[in-house]
Length: 254
Length: 340
Image: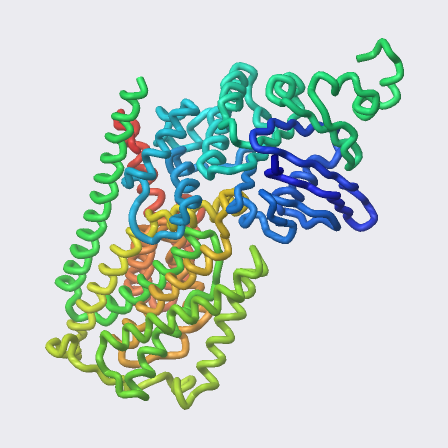
């Protein structure tokens, strides 16, 4: 099976500081991968390298076989690599329907149209309604974003990402900041993501990682120190050391 | 349940649509009634009212880039003046005296000037961008000053001749034709811009103003959209410039000045940014206030304009129209009506 997303020997240094040293990974269609790592492991830099916000010092990023290392963030989105944000970035005065509608229009190359209002275009609105309904946001379709709860805003982030019909979805802590009572709805939405979509999730919440991911990659000090199944990750000595430092050797801890 | 909500969704869509159209019609009616009232109340002052229309086009064009896209500029008169000079030069030097062709020339010149300004200004953000806009308007001004064989330099461009509009309506000494020509231009531009600001592109621009990073994550290029908006803004400002050249039959250097740009920004802030109605209300109030106060007290009128501005910025930061709109919306909500 050919890889949807391939990262090959990716390196990034800021001056003399090496933040990402030689990271490689490959994702196939339908993968559910969680990327974890202690603070300062280089997760954010890695996300920025993959999405194109940063240029790597060396190495390659490939999307569906095409080398996109020199392609900017918008070009990568157009090629099917879509991200969500750790802190929601939504337009406060727009409605969920407008957000998702804009995403649908952008995907179909119509976001630059000077005429017509998509809220009155049925083919766009049908898709918008369908996506919002899937995430349980339909009753809020025409409320302003500033008036809806944070958990619902997180679901809207997912709806926008899905409206772009990505082949790789990069989720940056999809449940961050959501009250405990709402996390089950986020988890449900994550479980219902299309099966042919490859998902790379950056997450701190280990419960969510274990429930969602079928593969876990651990990043520490800018390098991949573990790549394997969730059941093995806690047993791995290097992972324990990365998270717990020298305490890892005190067997009764953790 | 899903059936219910999709029905209510269709309903809210229809309600949104009728809401848009109702506001369009209110806007058109308001422009026509104000224009007629101006014509009937101040028949001897049509020159001022026509100038008001031209400046309203300039302020609308500024609203597109500043109010809708968040690009702060103090050089918008560069687009307006380019339109004015193009229309004037067509007539004075090339003998193209048809007012519609001259307007078209103004639009084209505004578009080109908008493209030039966009390419230079959009390389920077924030304060450097503002400084670039000032530099640009000074360059345009200096260019017009130096190219005096074309522009008349500091004496202004004169010798603008006009054919009758549609071959029927002479541009008379009292400015009746020019006034109605201006009202028609403003109405056409207003309707087109109403369509524009709620189009997908208008929505995208509102998004860029709020969060360009988000827009990039949607796969859209903010830079491309802003250049496009600048070009559209140039067409609107160029229309205003052409109207000013046609109605006064002279083009003065200060039509491309920093002062004119700054004044346009003041009018926009006075009325309220990010709303076409705000731009129109701001222009109307500023120019009438300026006219009345300067006639009533020629020594202290600038002080009063300054005081009015401070009062608006401090007590109605959304501008006069924006504040009035928010107040009405709040009351409507209070009455139990839900607004979409």
